[in-house]
Length: 175
Image (tube, rainbow, N blue to C red; front, side, top):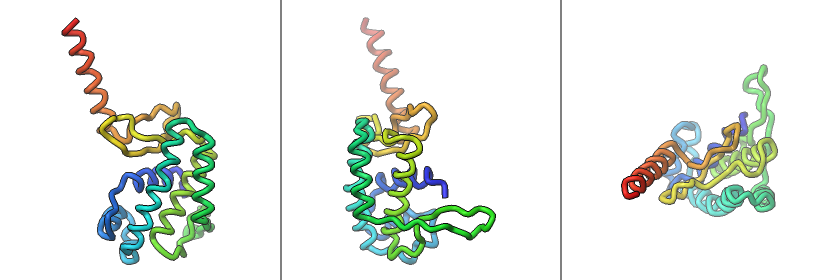
């Protein structure tokens, strides 16, 4: 498994509104094999996990290396991860979070923590952040070569750039 994809999916999980089972199923639209086992309890557990994990993204955004590491370590202790070697393609052995997880929420939490831990070890602890757009509170994972990402989406980036352009134009017109 490409653990960067797990990390990026984690940002999507944190940004998701998960009030109930149906919302979680909608969030998992690309993973239809999980839909039948999703429960309201999974949505409840994942909402709690969102609150627990967000400070890690905030610490990364603030370049608080210790906060990232301690936060992830505490969450990995609370939610133990069970990686397994996957042999569904014998020519491409790779790791997955255990598919024998007791629940969908346990599987998603394991993927999130393994992905973020790998991201932090491979790319560094400041590769997560909170959108720089003042009107947005979404998080993101920055895999850019020069660690330049500041917005959660192209939409937020464009909105901020247009606002800055208009402000410059207005300032130039009044000068």
